[in-house]
Length: 154
Image (cartoon, rainbow, N blue to C red; front, side, top):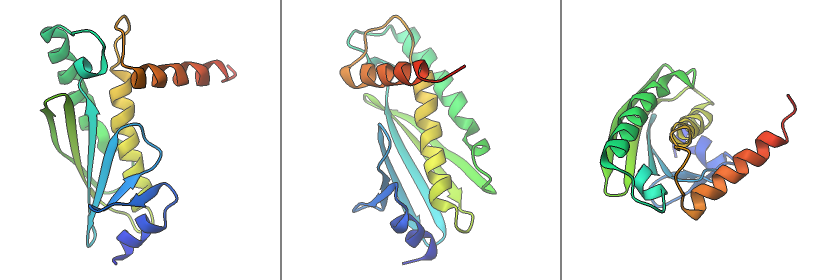
């Protein structure tokens, strides 16, 4: 096991999977593959249409996707890693795949990878458009965010 893989294996917020490692604290599917010192991250989030209980007009869905794609391209700014690259943002039926490559910092690979997964999920969550009825999972996330905001002193 490489030092980078050992770091993920020992990190409290990751668990080993058949493909590598998965964060245990996230809402959507994410997978981390470690090959030597290379770290590849894959995050799957639903399209806007898949997150709602009602159809979303194509123009709204397309605008949402374009905005999400543009925003997620800034992922390299959320860590101090020397090299973070968004290698793919693509639609697959009802999901959007975001793939990133990370040149890990010594002792910080797992934390940097988790920050990138959180960034993708947070960027997705920022794109939730008020006025739609959302699936139970998304509505639960929205309720949790509202509750957390109410408990935060100004």
